[in-house]
Every structure is written in C-alpha cells, then in structure tokens.
Amino acid sequence: MTEKRPVIDDFSTMLPDLMAAPYAFYAGLRDAPPVFWAPRERSWVLHRAAEVQVVLGDRSFRVAELSSIVGGICQRSGRSAPGLTGLLSVFLPFINPPEHGLSRRYIKAVLNADRTEGFAPVIERIAQNLLTGGAAGGRFDAATGYADLLPPLFMGHFLGIPGQLVVDFVLQTAEMGRTFDRGCSPRYYARMEEMIVARRAPFRHLVAERRRSPGDDGLSRMIALADALRPMPEEVIADHAMFLIMAGSENTSALIGNAIAATVGAAPGCDLSGADDGDFRAAVEEALRCDSPVQQMWRIASSAQTLGGAQIAAGDQLLLLIGAANRDPATNPDPDRFDPQRGNRRSFGFGLGMHYCLGSEIALLEAQIALRQIVRRQPRRDPDHAFSWRDRQTLRRPLRLPLILSPNESLRP
Image (cartoon, rainbow, N blue to C red; front, side):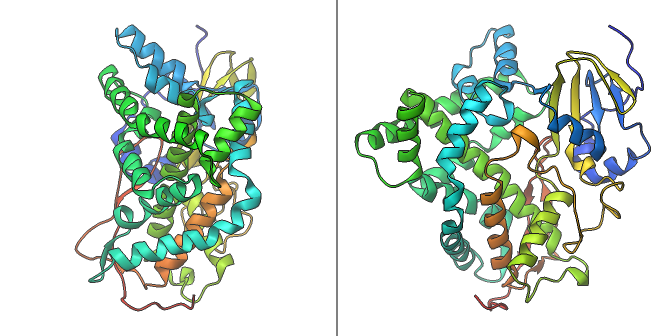
C-alpha cells in the first residue's frame, strides 16, 4: 500500500477523551492538517467544514454498508445474524445507490412532508402530558422523562401503533446504537440478533393485521405504497417501520436533549423566556450545530483524488468528524459559543446531498416545540446532580439532564 501522508499516529475514535469531552478534543485538532491519515483507524480523517462539505456532496464517495460489514464479522466468527443484517439493510444512512434511491423514495412518500404542520398539535399535547405527569415536585430528568419519550410517542401516533409498544421498543433496543460505533464484538452482534428477532414479532403481526384492515395511519400507508410500488414481504415492511421508529426516535431524542442542555444555563443573551417560535427554531438549529447528535460519518472513495492536500486512493476510507466541522472557525466564528442569534450558521447535523435526513423538518418541529414547552417551566440545573452523556462514538445523546422546574408556566400558550 502506498504510504499515506500527512499522518497523525495516535488518533483513534476509541480514545476516551474523544467520547468524554469531544469539543475540547476537536479544538485540539484545529491546527492539524485538514485531511490526515490515522493508522489506528486505517482511514483519512476530515475535521474541517470545507472538506466535509465536498465529500458529503459528492456521490463518488460511497457510504460504508453496515449490513455487509456486520454480516462479514458475524460470518468470520461462525455466527449468523440474518435478523440484524436484514434490519440494517434498510437503514438509509448505510445504503448506496441504486437501492438507496428506491428506499429513499419509499420512505419519503411514507413521511409525506405536506402533513408536517398538522403534527404540531399532537407534539404539543405529548410534550404537555410528559411535563405535567413527570415534573411533580419540581425535580425532573429532562432526558429520561422527556427527550427520550416524546419522539417515540409521536412515532407511535404517526404510524398508528400503540405508544407504549413504541416506547418499549425504543428503550429495549437503545443498546443497538453501539452498532454504529467501531469496535463491537461478535458477541455483541449475537445479542443484537436475539433482540431484533424478538422485537420484530409484534411489528410483523401489526403489518399483517393492517394489511387485512387498513386505517388512516403511517403503517397502513407504508403497506399500500409497498404493494403499489415495490412489493415487500411483511418482514421487510416491519423492518422499514422499525427503521423509521429508531431513526425518528434516537436522533430526535438526542437533538431535544442537546438543545435543552445547551439552552438551560446559557449566557443571559440566550434567554428564551418570552421568545417566539422563530427564536426557538433558531435555538434548536444552533444546538444542532453546536452539539450535533451525529458526531461521525464514514465514506469510501470510489476513485483517486486530491482532497485537502492529501492524495486519496480509490477504496480509501474517510472518517468525517461532523462535530468538529460544525465548529470550524472558518465558517462559524467563535464556534464554541452557543448563540441562537448567530447568522448564516453552517451545520452538517442532518448530513448533506443524497443522504440528507428525510425527517429533518419533523425532527426540528419536535425539538422546537419540546424546547418551548420546557422553557415555559423556567428550568434551571439541579445543583445536586450533573448532566451526563452516553459513551458513544457516533451519536451524542444525553443520559441524564437533571432539572428543577417551576410549577407555574411563564409563557403564554
């Protein structure tokens, strides 16, 4: 193999400092070459906005197909994981053309962006119910009692599936988020296989039931579209429904939690009491930039090219540090400051190009409403308990957000 230059020998996504304090770590990379080779990752690392934008917008850079990677690891270990790899094969962020285009059109038709505004009253009601039911006594964990629950409850409403079933599914499959990180063992994948096979059963039952007796809901729409456009067995439709639930819950919960964490205790100029919907939208978008749920993305070069002064060969793997690129001072001055009034912010939190998140508008709407509803309760940090985040490489998401809420609402409905 041709020697790679420039090189940073000690970089690794598995460094404890990168997961524990990612933004201090990223700040330490700002003087590094924009594209460098990391032998421990066997990949090029990109951490600045200009190069990340080029790669995300260029279709010649393919995604790493997670289903095939996991399947290969399992096969080499003598284990089989058809349930897990089958589910991963419909995860849009990890599919390349032409299958990606077919699946994307299908999911886009299911989501139907024209319906987005009608979701607001439903999201408002869910948020109010969670705050009313969980914030008694003033102390409230805005992660486990709010951010983790609102998106799956909304996805249950959207798909026409009982909310508790969806919440249980999301909580029980939370560990699957590690599948997107490097370094998972065959034993871990075996556990995920058992879990997915068990959790798929009620969704297959619902697909069969809804096919016999369709309703006015997202799951019925999924079945009708599948039957009309690209016939799928019940198991594959169930996998698409599970993908929608997981994608629509995990990342949105992370965005809501990160936005709350960024907003509570922010500088006086960021006070949102008395703010309007546009201000809350801006705060969520700034949280997406400043503390993106998606911290890393992977791509594979289809052809040789020069990028950021580095000579990329066909087949080379590239690691895009999204959290670092979002804080590139070249595109976002004073990048480590949370500033909802920031103009022309640049963020790759929802991706770019053909893999841009189809549910971005729904996620932003959920986060905007969730943030506004909790700000009405005049939140402040619980001095006896610290905020904490899950120890993940790819998805940055709060584990605990202990708050003290006022019993009285401070904003008009």
